[in-house]
Image (cartoon, rainbow, N blue to C red; front, side, top):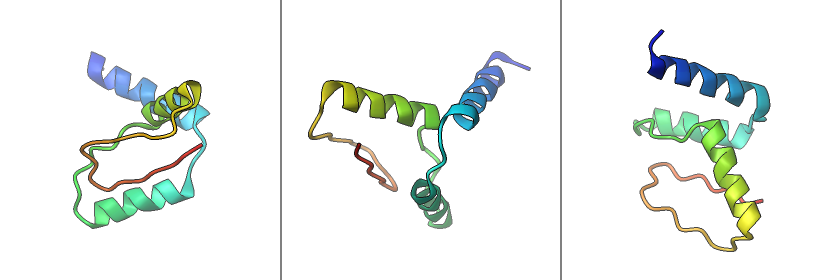
Length: 75
């Protein structure tokens, strides 16, 4: 196993073990795939970290540039 595949395995493990599933997000990802959009999605761990940043800073507005199949969730 090379280093990149090891990190992917670790990321999947933490994502599957500690991040709750989101049925709406799951459907959005399926719709994106069905619509032919490339899979440039952040991992569940990255999404959770971004959510934590938003909550810690008390951000009221967030600007995301470069979304393909947008999905917004707020605290």
